[in-house]
Length: 333
Image (tube, rainbow, N blue to C red; front, side, top):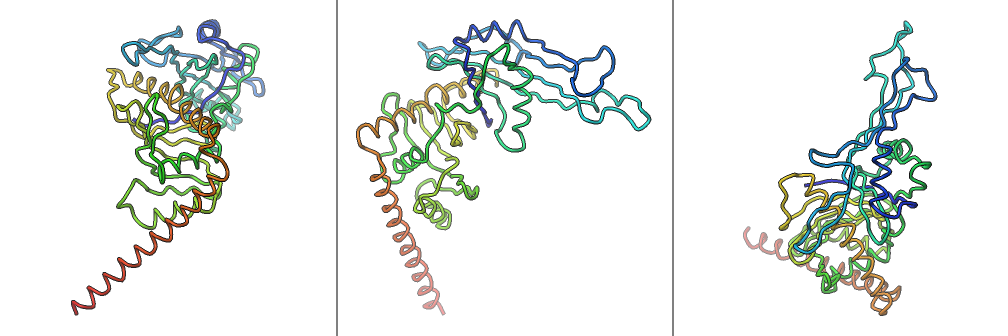
């Protein structure tokens, strides 16, 4: 299962029950376009709809363990906008579908630390941000919801936090947390500020060029935009996901014991574990490491220097392998 998430915080909503009430009372916000003329009697649809069969606008619960359940609301946001060109050259209306831009996305509402969030299942990029804004402006209307914060700061990952994770994987014990148990199984790529280059790096046996590229990036102490990590959570669940600087994610693969008959239920529980357990766990344990003086700018610099030593060692090893191959080829002539 693969999916992206762009997170939105509902700043003025205190509980998921409050969110449910607002959704129930404002599930249909159909309206006529303001800037262009439109056929008499027609409106643009702007609606919250059940996200799947069996789901409702009300608060639902999903079981995680025997003793732990999570509250959520799972809906589909549907928004229509009028295009600029709505008539044929002869002045007649175009067909309705030809007059519309449409945006549709599943949205998961949940609580965490006395805040309410909406996880919009869309990628956050230059090509899609306008679609997310359609949903925010047409369905999360300020008069109804109050203010909203896209990509809230409490889920942001600092450069230092990224490098702490990398140090855990490259020279540490790979353990992020012991309660709950959370370890880095593999680090499979990064995205930097200068260019987006994914490099495979999952232990011994990787291509030397990919490994050196990753180590060189770290050695340069460059700014990171995202890391692609495989994290084992609670000993049973393995999440391979891309964690971006502003807290948006893309789940790439999941292996574990969580099985549901309905595919959307699996998407719900995996999103909730990522945003209620894994990402907060990374942030909390990074802060603990700073408080205990286990991580600071000096230790980060020591880590970067150790990466430089690794680069020298890897290059020497590779050169020795190449020399050995050349000697063997010469002896075979």
